[in-house]
Image 1 (cartoon, helix red, strand yellow):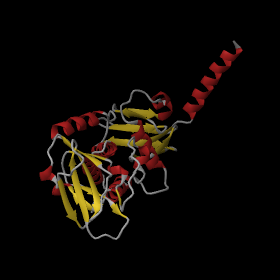
Image 2 (cartoon, helix red, strand yellow; image 1 turned 30 degrees about the vertical axis):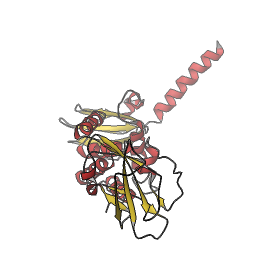
Image 3 (cartoon, one colour; image 1 turned 120 degrees about the vertical axis):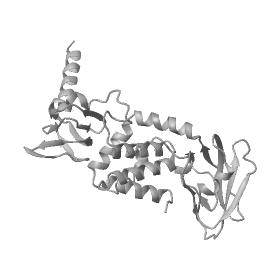
Image 4 (cartoon, one colour; image 1 turned 180 degrees about the vertical axis):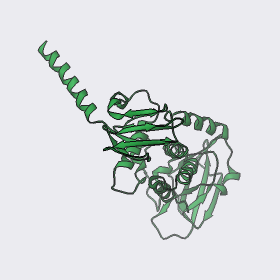
Length: 299
């Protein structure tokens, strides 16, 4: 009996301590939203850290979404004054549909000063590239193990361990990986999707690889060419997973992150670019776009 009482008291103590340690981050807002911190009132700012003693003021027609303790999101949409110390329950991770990985990623990017913002996205994503088993002069980044594509111009790229001047790009049907149905020689370490669009059809899957001219490479990567309808349905589902309120720039950035995590690289580039334009003052959005372009050889 004493053991049970001790466990109950310990659980209550842990809950109280946890509530006392709540910390917040202003994720997104619209309209007239201000923050009172240390008795000083200022206009809300995306990425602004707040402690439990802060107060958020929301005017009529305005809204604000906060992140709490790295993992939970909640939104104030009604006009009023909100002392954050009264919203400890909102810090519990519940059925919120926003990816917990994404929330943790945004928290880390906006609160940690070390490293280049947006450069460690993969550490918070579910996708993991396959280990290369080939021994040849070509290395294809595991980020490109699978590419889901529905439109836009995007390069398929690789690295070369040799000083070769010419490379062969090869494309295979998914049901016949013994013989490529298309090959071409290029002088760059990449080929734009626009160069192969006439060779592939929406709704089909393919394999591709690259090799130094005169050599072979048996390391095949997947290219899924999806229809616009398939992509639009997938995108609509991602949009539904946002917080109760999300400004256009924050939504675009989240969609870019989630699309990249699901191998829609051309489409992710489009939304990262939108986020950087919609909020040109946001260092994270600009830096992520630059990092993405570097990762995928986009000039």
